[in-house]
Length: 197
Image 1 (tube, helix red, strand yellow):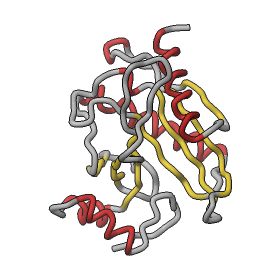
Image 2 (tube, rainbow, N blue to C red):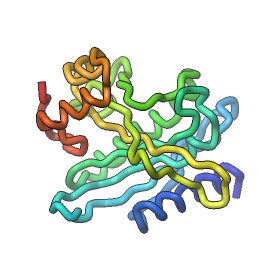
Image 3 (tube, rainbow, N blue to C red):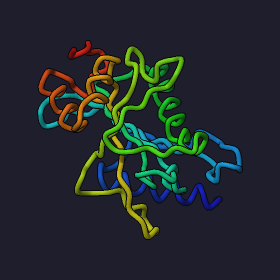
């Protein structure tokens, strides 16, 4: 087992400390040696009922935190929740997009930052949304890969529409703007919702 595989397994174990036993874990994206990381793992928790009765699919990356992103958030993994069940094809597409986002900072040289809007030119990241908002999954707790002396945030990806993205970007306090959108009905896990603006 390579050192990158061992690291990904350690991050998988950190997820299990947080969320319990997953439905699936796999390594999927082999990367050029020049990036300094070999591959990205994906962990999936298929729908289960939550205390409020909603049904959520949870997905997360494992491996991007192996290397410093040289940004305001030097180390992180990405995660998202999706309301309801996904077809096999939809799940495959979402995991591919998640892995693409996990390696983007290493291709562009620009790390991610909290409370920021991320847009990609061309095909939307998660249709029908135009962008994603990045926030800390849990401001108090961090992921701790088992056997490694480091901790880092799990950045939550919240798909948003263009008008919502502009509303957040034009605000002096982006986190407050995001909370305003939530009060207007933005459900971060609802991929079938319409724009709140």
